[in-house]
Image (cartoon, rainbow, N blue to C red; front, side, top):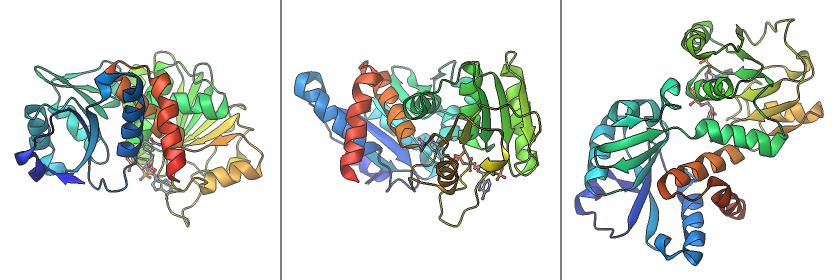
Length: 297
Ligand code: NDP
């Protein structure tokens, strides 16, 4: 693991990529990216000197870190907690699709500075398709949570024209703020908010349930919603991947509902980031990344 101090003597001669976070010790990104790069290098010498590093960067140091990484010739950066929102202020340009998310997780080097992108929404949509066989387009969606991940998921659902978006959150104020931010980009998609213990009678059957709360990260966490009280959903997707079976997914299993955790989202957002840096299609490297993660468990 590296820190900002290591850049003072940086002399890696190849194409450098990195993830920045705080903490960063448990990030799986270096493992999956380096595995994909090694496999690409077997058939394409261009990738022989590509390497993905990880840096522990406290939030106050982010502006300096991004400047230094640019000056040292880094080609691409991933950002994780707590940098995704902070970095929006530090980029030279931001991808139009990432603008309403208000957060970036992928930066590509340009002569003028960093170009910012957000691949989390793509990762979620691909994971829902792969794990549940569902498309966001035309599907009613019940989204749990109103934090950063929920905002990204909501924007993706709206950009892909889900049939309707129902957002439930524990804290009413946070829900109201998110709803106000989403209304201007709803583009005709009906958006509703509700408290998780007051389930609206109008909720449609066949909805996709997405958990974007952090409830489920710890074994004693409550379920973010009682699935048994909802009209029968088409499937349940939980962004959490550790533990692999959250209380919400265990409840889905009990009710015999199709369900999937967030591991494939991690893979697909990573593969899309690598596509942005390298031009190699995300569909080609996602299986390499998934295999590396599976082998490490
Ligand atoms: P934030 O801290 O921004 O938001 C947390 C959300 O969870 C809020 O809506 C909060 O509600 C809610 N929440 C927290 N604890 C509880 C609880 N006990 N019961 C009900 N609701 C609760 O976090 P993020 O949005 O950044 O991340 C959310 C989750 O998504 C995390 O678990 C993260 O690991 C996962 N994630 C997975 C990714 C992947 O690649 N698979 C990518 C990004 C995120 P309130 O407003 O009431 O506080």
